[in-house]
Image (cartoon, rainbow, N blue to C red; front, side):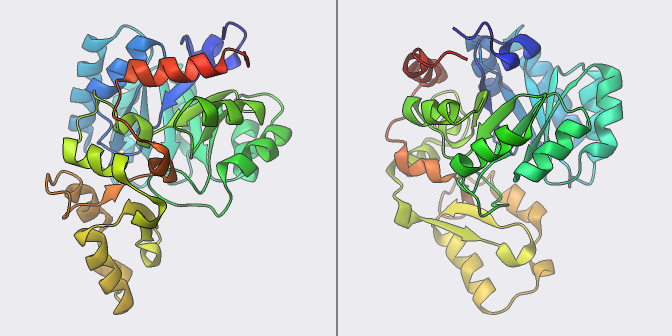
Length: 307
Protein backbone atom coordinates (compact mmCIF):
# COMPACT_ATOMS: atom_id res chain seq x y z
CA UNK A 1 0.00 0.00 0.00
CA UNK A 2 2.79 2.44 0.87
CA UNK A 3 5.45 1.05 -1.46
CA UNK A 4 5.85 4.40 -3.22
CA UNK A 5 5.70 6.54 -0.11
CA UNK A 6 8.90 8.58 0.24
CA UNK A 7 9.05 8.10 4.02
CA UNK A 8 8.64 4.35 4.02
CA UNK A 9 11.25 3.99 1.29
CA UNK A 10 13.81 6.34 2.85
CA UNK A 11 13.40 5.14 6.44
CA UNK A 12 12.84 1.44 5.83
CA UNK A 13 9.47 1.25 7.57
CA UNK A 14 6.18 -0.34 6.52
CA UNK A 15 3.80 2.49 7.39
CA UNK A 16 4.38 6.29 7.46
CA UNK A 17 2.97 6.43 10.97
CA UNK A 18 5.19 7.97 13.63
CA UNK A 19 5.19 8.25 17.36
CA UNK A 20 6.30 11.71 18.57
CA UNK A 21 8.39 11.09 21.67
CA UNK A 22 8.02 14.60 23.09
CA UNK A 23 9.18 13.58 26.59
CA UNK A 24 10.40 10.62 28.60
CA UNK A 25 6.91 9.12 28.91
CA UNK A 26 7.69 7.69 25.46
CA UNK A 27 9.99 4.85 26.44
CA UNK A 28 11.50 1.78 24.84
CA UNK A 29 8.52 -0.50 25.44
CA UNK A 30 6.14 1.74 23.51
CA UNK A 31 8.65 2.63 20.81
CA UNK A 32 9.55 -1.03 20.31
CA UNK A 33 5.91 -2.05 19.95
CA UNK A 34 5.20 0.62 17.31
CA UNK A 35 8.34 -0.19 15.31
CA UNK A 36 7.67 -3.91 15.48
CA UNK A 37 4.25 -3.36 13.87
CA UNK A 38 5.76 -1.31 11.05
CA UNK A 39 5.48 2.31 12.16
CA UNK A 40 8.36 4.29 13.60
CA UNK A 41 8.51 4.11 17.37
CA UNK A 42 10.39 6.91 19.07
CA UNK A 43 12.06 7.29 22.46
CA UNK A 44 11.57 10.74 23.98
CA UNK A 45 14.72 12.06 25.65
CA UNK A 46 13.04 15.20 27.01
CA UNK A 47 15.15 16.56 29.87
CA UNK A 48 16.52 13.16 30.82
CA UNK A 49 20.30 12.55 31.11
CA UNK A 50 22.38 10.67 28.49
CA UNK A 51 22.66 7.61 30.74
CA UNK A 52 18.89 7.23 30.78
CA UNK A 53 18.68 7.55 27.00
CA UNK A 54 21.45 5.00 26.51
CA UNK A 55 19.56 2.41 28.58
CA UNK A 56 16.37 3.01 26.58
CA UNK A 57 18.19 2.65 23.25
CA UNK A 58 19.78 -0.63 24.36
CA UNK A 59 16.37 -1.83 25.53
CA UNK A 60 14.50 -0.96 22.33
CA UNK A 61 17.11 -2.78 20.23
CA UNK A 62 16.21 -5.95 22.14
CA UNK A 63 12.52 -5.42 21.44
CA UNK A 64 12.68 -4.88 17.67
CA UNK A 65 15.07 -5.24 14.75
CA UNK A 66 13.11 -2.61 12.82
CA UNK A 67 14.10 1.07 12.57
CA UNK A 68 13.29 3.32 15.53
CA UNK A 69 14.02 6.90 16.46
CA UNK A 70 14.85 9.31 19.27
CA UNK A 71 13.37 12.77 19.79
CA UNK A 72 15.76 15.32 21.29
CA UNK A 73 14.59 18.39 23.21
CA UNK A 74 17.20 20.92 22.18
CA UNK A 75 16.98 22.92 25.43
CA UNK A 76 18.18 19.95 27.45
CA UNK A 77 21.37 21.15 29.23
CA UNK A 78 23.03 17.87 28.23
CA UNK A 79 22.13 18.14 24.54
CA UNK A 80 25.73 17.78 23.32
CA UNK A 81 26.11 14.49 25.19
CA UNK A 82 22.70 13.30 24.03
CA UNK A 83 23.70 13.91 20.40
CA UNK A 84 26.85 11.84 20.96
CA UNK A 85 24.78 9.06 22.55
CA UNK A 86 22.41 8.93 19.57
CA UNK A 87 25.33 8.77 17.13
CA UNK A 88 27.36 6.25 19.15
CA UNK A 89 24.45 3.81 19.28
CA UNK A 90 23.59 4.19 15.61
CA UNK A 91 20.03 5.43 16.09
CA UNK A 92 18.52 5.40 12.56
CA UNK A 93 16.32 8.51 12.87
CA UNK A 94 16.44 11.58 15.12
CA UNK A 95 13.63 14.08 15.59
CA UNK A 96 14.33 17.47 17.19
CA UNK A 97 12.20 20.20 18.76
CA UNK A 98 12.40 23.14 21.13
CA UNK A 99 15.30 24.98 19.53
CA UNK A 100 17.59 25.33 16.54
CA UNK A 101 18.77 21.92 15.25
CA UNK A 102 21.04 23.27 12.50
CA UNK A 103 24.28 23.18 14.59
CA UNK A 104 23.84 19.40 14.88
CA UNK A 105 23.02 18.63 11.25
CA UNK A 106 26.63 17.98 10.27
CA UNK A 107 27.14 15.49 13.11
CA UNK A 108 24.05 13.50 12.23
CA UNK A 109 24.66 13.64 8.49
CA UNK A 110 28.25 12.43 8.94
CA UNK A 111 26.97 9.50 11.01
CA UNK A 112 24.25 8.58 8.51
CA UNK A 113 21.46 9.43 10.94
CA UNK A 114 18.26 10.68 9.31
CA UNK A 115 17.21 14.12 10.61
CA UNK A 116 13.56 15.16 11.02
CA UNK A 117 13.02 18.51 12.78
CA UNK A 118 9.62 19.19 14.34
CA UNK A 119 8.68 22.79 13.50
CA UNK A 120 5.65 25.06 14.07
CA UNK A 121 5.58 26.90 10.74
CA UNK A 122 5.86 26.53 7.00
CA UNK A 123 8.74 29.03 6.96
CA UNK A 124 10.85 26.95 9.33
CA UNK A 125 9.99 23.77 7.43
CA UNK A 126 11.42 25.32 4.27
CA UNK A 127 14.54 26.40 6.17
CA UNK A 128 15.06 22.80 7.31
CA UNK A 129 14.71 21.59 3.73
CA UNK A 130 17.24 24.17 2.53
CA UNK A 131 19.70 22.75 5.07
CA UNK A 132 19.22 19.15 3.87
CA UNK A 133 16.93 17.71 6.52
CA UNK A 134 15.65 14.28 5.46
CA UNK A 135 12.04 15.17 6.24
CA UNK A 136 10.16 17.67 8.37
CA UNK A 137 7.31 17.33 10.85
CA UNK A 138 5.01 20.34 11.14
CA UNK A 139 3.17 20.63 14.46
CA UNK A 140 -0.01 22.63 14.69
CA UNK A 141 -1.78 24.23 17.63
CA UNK A 142 -3.61 20.96 18.37
CA UNK A 143 -0.40 19.07 19.16
CA UNK A 144 0.73 17.42 22.38
CA UNK A 145 2.95 19.24 24.84
CA UNK A 146 4.31 22.71 24.16
CA UNK A 147 1.99 25.02 22.23
CA UNK A 148 4.31 26.89 19.84
CA UNK A 149 1.95 28.17 17.16
CA UNK A 150 -1.51 29.64 16.64
CA UNK A 151 -1.99 27.80 13.35
CA UNK A 152 -3.75 24.46 13.18
CA UNK A 153 -2.14 21.36 11.75
CA UNK A 154 -4.75 21.18 9.03
CA UNK A 155 -4.00 24.73 7.86
CA UNK A 156 -0.24 24.18 8.05
CA UNK A 157 -0.22 21.00 5.94
CA UNK A 158 -1.18 22.54 2.56
CA UNK A 159 0.88 25.69 3.21
CA UNK A 160 3.97 23.66 4.03
CA UNK A 161 3.48 21.13 1.25
CA UNK A 162 3.35 23.98 -1.25
CA UNK A 163 6.68 25.36 -0.03
CA UNK A 164 8.60 22.08 0.16
CA UNK A 165 10.24 20.92 -3.06
CA UNK A 166 12.42 17.96 -2.10
CA UNK A 167 11.61 16.39 1.25
CA UNK A 168 8.53 14.63 2.66
CA UNK A 169 6.12 16.23 5.12
CA UNK A 170 4.86 14.67 8.36
CA UNK A 171 1.73 16.12 10.00
CA UNK A 172 1.67 16.33 13.80
CA UNK A 173 -1.23 17.47 15.96
CA UNK A 174 -4.92 16.62 16.15
CA UNK A 175 -4.51 13.21 14.48
CA UNK A 176 -5.78 10.20 16.42
CA UNK A 177 -7.75 7.85 14.14
CA UNK A 178 -8.35 6.78 10.55
CA UNK A 179 -10.48 9.76 9.58
CA UNK A 180 -8.11 12.43 10.92
CA UNK A 181 -5.17 10.59 9.36
CA UNK A 182 -6.97 10.43 6.03
CA UNK A 183 -7.66 14.17 6.19
CA UNK A 184 -3.96 14.84 6.73
CA UNK A 185 -2.97 12.75 3.70
CA UNK A 186 -5.62 14.36 1.51
CA UNK A 187 -4.26 17.80 2.42
CA UNK A 188 -0.77 16.76 1.33
CA UNK A 189 0.98 15.03 4.22
CA UNK A 190 3.31 12.13 3.41
CA UNK A 191 3.10 10.76 6.95
CA UNK A 192 1.42 11.36 10.30
CA UNK A 193 2.77 11.71 13.83
CA UNK A 194 0.82 11.04 17.03
CA UNK A 195 1.60 11.30 20.73
CA UNK A 196 -1.63 11.43 22.76
CA UNK A 197 -3.12 8.49 20.83
CA UNK A 198 -0.10 6.26 21.42
CA UNK A 199 0.19 7.27 25.09
CA UNK A 200 -3.38 6.00 25.44
CA UNK A 201 -2.34 2.56 24.22
CA UNK A 202 -2.06 -0.65 26.20
CA UNK A 203 1.72 -0.68 25.72
CA UNK A 204 2.34 2.84 27.08
CA UNK A 205 3.84 2.88 30.58
CA UNK A 206 1.84 5.81 31.92
CA UNK A 207 -0.64 4.91 34.66
CA UNK A 208 -4.04 3.46 33.85
CA UNK A 209 -5.54 6.42 35.73
CA UNK A 210 -3.78 8.84 33.36
CA UNK A 211 -5.02 6.91 30.32
CA UNK A 212 -8.56 6.86 31.73
CA UNK A 213 -8.39 10.61 32.26
CA UNK A 214 -7.48 11.15 28.59
CA UNK A 215 -10.30 8.89 27.41
CA UNK A 216 -12.84 10.80 29.53
CA UNK A 217 -11.60 14.28 28.57
CA UNK A 218 -13.85 16.85 26.91
CA UNK A 219 -12.76 20.12 25.34
CA UNK A 220 -13.75 21.96 28.53
CA UNK A 221 -11.27 19.87 30.50
CA UNK A 222 -8.24 21.11 28.54
CA UNK A 223 -6.21 24.21 29.33
CA UNK A 224 -2.89 25.85 28.42
CA UNK A 225 -0.65 26.87 31.31
CA UNK A 226 2.88 28.25 31.84
CA UNK A 227 2.62 30.68 28.93
CA UNK A 228 4.48 33.34 30.94
CA UNK A 229 7.54 31.07 31.21
CA UNK A 230 8.00 30.76 27.45
CA UNK A 231 6.92 27.11 27.63
CA UNK A 232 3.13 27.17 27.13
CA UNK A 233 1.93 23.70 27.94
CA UNK A 234 -1.39 22.02 27.11
CA UNK A 235 -2.75 19.92 29.95
CA UNK A 236 -5.90 18.29 31.23
CA UNK A 237 -7.16 20.32 34.17
CA UNK A 238 -6.41 18.98 37.65
CA UNK A 239 -5.14 20.23 41.01
CA UNK A 240 -1.62 20.69 39.60
CA UNK A 241 -2.82 22.92 36.75
CA UNK A 242 -5.02 24.93 39.13
CA UNK A 243 -2.00 25.65 41.34
CA UNK A 244 -0.06 26.82 38.29
CA UNK A 245 -2.95 29.07 37.25
CA UNK A 246 -3.03 30.66 40.69
CA UNK A 247 0.71 31.38 40.45
CA UNK A 248 0.14 32.99 37.06
CA UNK A 249 -2.67 35.14 38.45
CA UNK A 250 -0.40 36.34 41.27
CA UNK A 251 2.16 37.53 38.72
CA UNK A 252 4.84 34.93 39.38
CA UNK A 253 8.17 35.36 37.64
CA UNK A 254 9.16 32.67 35.09
CA UNK A 255 12.15 31.78 37.27
CA UNK A 256 9.80 30.63 40.02
CA UNK A 257 8.72 27.64 37.92
CA UNK A 258 11.50 25.43 36.62
CA UNK A 259 10.78 23.36 33.51
CA UNK A 260 12.90 20.60 35.10
CA UNK A 261 10.44 20.48 37.97
CA UNK A 262 7.55 20.10 35.55
CA UNK A 263 9.34 17.19 33.88
CA UNK A 264 10.04 15.50 37.21
CA UNK A 265 6.38 15.84 38.15
CA UNK A 266 5.48 13.65 35.16
CA UNK A 267 6.67 10.65 37.20
CA UNK A 268 4.15 11.33 39.95
CA UNK A 269 1.56 8.52 40.04
CA UNK A 270 -1.05 10.83 41.61
CA UNK A 271 -2.89 12.20 38.57
CA UNK A 272 -4.08 15.23 40.52
CA UNK A 273 -0.53 16.33 41.29
CA UNK A 274 1.21 15.99 37.95
CA UNK A 275 0.97 17.75 34.58
CA UNK A 276 -1.49 15.66 32.56
CA UNK A 277 -0.07 16.48 29.14
CA UNK A 278 -2.39 15.92 26.19
CA UNK A 279 -3.10 17.23 22.72
CA UNK A 280 -6.54 18.36 21.61
CA UNK A 281 -6.94 14.91 20.08
CA UNK A 282 -7.70 13.69 23.62
CA UNK A 283 -11.27 14.84 23.09
CA UNK A 284 -11.67 12.33 20.25
CA UNK A 285 -10.08 9.32 21.96
CA UNK A 286 -12.72 7.11 23.56
CA UNK A 287 -10.95 3.78 24.09
CA UNK A 288 -7.63 2.37 25.22
CA UNK A 289 -6.35 0.15 22.42
CA UNK A 290 -3.18 -1.75 21.57
CA UNK A 291 -0.67 -0.14 19.21
CA UNK A 292 -1.54 -2.81 16.67
CA UNK A 293 -5.24 -1.91 16.80
CA UNK A 294 -4.47 1.82 16.51
CA UNK A 295 -2.25 1.39 13.47
CA UNK A 296 -4.49 -1.20 11.78
CA UNK A 297 -7.50 1.12 12.12
CA UNK A 298 -5.62 3.95 10.44
CA UNK A 299 -4.22 1.76 7.67
CA UNK A 300 -7.70 0.37 6.95
CA UNK A 301 -9.10 3.90 6.57
CA UNK A 302 -6.20 4.91 4.32
CA UNK A 303 -6.54 1.98 1.94
CA UNK A 304 -8.31 4.17 -0.58
CA UNK A 305 -5.67 6.91 -0.30
CA UNK A 306 -2.36 5.15 -1.02
CA UNK A 307 0.76 7.31 -0.80
